[in-house]
Image (cartoon, rainbow over all chains, first blue to last red; front, side, top):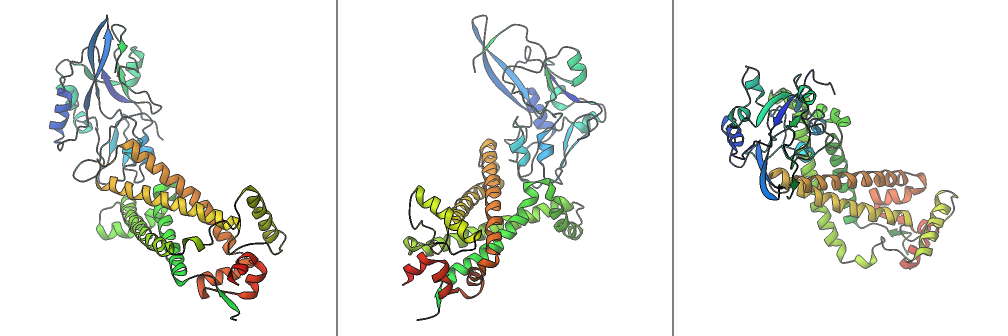
Length: 187
Length: 229
């Protein structure tokens, strides 16, 4: 697989996310998604911090992995990786076989639309191409979600783990601000 | 006394022929989904379709068409299999797939008889089927059952995306894949032995006459011959 010249990704600040789901709604509105379809979703987790239970949130969509499983398993070659690392799905090629959905370890792909074809976050590539931010990032009121170059984020000391985030060998293009304090994950 | 014995009922012959057709269709239509190595099949089918539709998507068109063939063939194979199984229920105890003798010693003896027949070109002490044939029949039966069940569930998941969670459908797809690999290996062995010159009587019986020469049966399938008497 040809490696992209750069790798765009999301930078998420779990310390400041308030779980308002504005990113989820912004994505749904901008992409005019059907009911029950959400390319981006916010999950809630319970942690113990300073002997107090507290909720933390994780906003997730397609992570535009550096080695995307969806791309390798798609029999119709509907997935391509752009030079900036964004994984694009050509829905004209999709036949709805579901291989990509099964292979994605993050549940970022759904087949539940009316046309039974796969769909997922495209990092608002068409907006980025005209210099705008993705809808979810633009919609976040506390700037907990940002767009970064993964190499730059790594050099800046951003981390690859957060509460509730599942590690995988697919090299997901998401980074997290380091935690402020140590906490115990409760579920 | 007739100098031939009835080896296969017309229903068995018909089922075998149709199963052969459907299995070939299923393999050809399933391979491009099994691995991208076989995309050429989808391209071959898809080019004329995409030209006709004018959509410029030969691979997707070919795969969509092959999937319809796969589902249709699988459905028809499942239907004839169910009909066949019901028809066979009436004589289930007399089917030749059951062991003539049970136990570990019987297995070793069965292997010895197969070696006599295939390697030393002597007459083995067989029933209608030898140990290898019975074992492969059972493997084919179970893998086909797994293929049909997992296939039906995967089709339902394709029709309704929320029918199964993705980890369950991935598990089912793995079951489908592994069952296919096992079945394909057994089928290759089955076809190889079926086409051996020493097996010409059984081959003709299955595909042409349904009958085998009595003297041949007496010499090569003594246990079966004893049952016929």
